[in-house]
Length: 171
Figure (cartoon, rainbow, N blue to C red):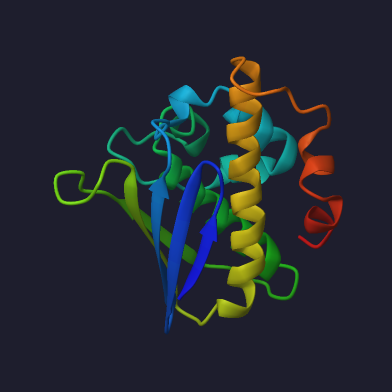
């Protein structure tokens, strides 16, 4: 089991044979991207291919539209899926990953999410880099959004510089 903590959320993950189960706890009241206005700008500048993700949602929206009003854990799910795909396609012709985000705030504390990432093959060797890239991007979305709303000092560099260019050059 692994853990990750930031100022905005924490995650615990458990590696399964052909998947990963993550538990995410948002550490503030911002659980939806409607409160993170920098989401689209950051995604478009750092990982624009994420908008081509298939997304199965009740309204049958594209991920481009869904990302405007979705749970932050659902965004993290798609970040992990896209990073897994980008990393795996460097060494393979196929990359088939699936994700599902769920929550039950009657049973669990507000802001607690479960994210299940799976594949037909073992992908653990790709997961750690994909996860690291994904949480860095999500943290940057929080920071940039809060800075734009006046809640934090505004970052003075673009996402690629703050998130270490070497992370993106390895994708």
